[in-house]
Structure formats: structure tokens, C-alpha cells
Length: 97
Image 1 (cartoon, one colour):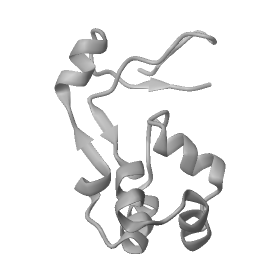
Image 2 (cartoon, helix red, strand yellow):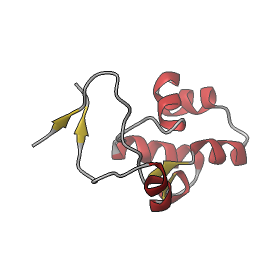
Image 3 (cartoon, one colour):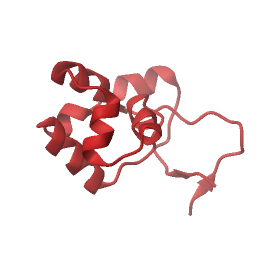
């Protein structure tokens, strides 16, 4: 069963953090350049970079890793303490409408 959140509520904190900004800084690459290389819109990359994304396709992750010459673990970090500090998350999936 998929639960739906009411419009206007904030999403539960995630234990997965996206560190794309750090990897881009290390590679001295802009978000625009990465988007051009991978074929992803700047808006979608921005959502990913700011941690607002709730999912990522493996094909997208593969393309990012290929262009950034990195491993998935360089972009995605599991930090259970960040989710615990921000609030209780029961780990169940939440789908957007």
C-alpha cells in the first residue's frame, strides 16, 4: 500500500544524503556542464543536488558516475543520524500525486 501525503506538508527526513555539490566542486564542473554532458535538465539536477529528490533511476546514477568519473557512494551517502535528528521516519514509501 502506498501512502500519500497531503499537499503542502513537508517530506519526512531521509537518511540518504546527496553529495553531488561536493563532487562537482572537486571536479570543478558546473551543474549546467554536467546537465549538458548527461542530458538531464538543470531543474532535475538541482532537485537532486539540493536533496529534494525522493528517487533516482539507476540509468541516471550510471550516467552521473560516468561523467564525474566516480562511484555511486561518492554521490549518495547513508547518514542515519541526520534522519534521526530531523524527526521520526518509519521508513515506509511515500508517493507523490
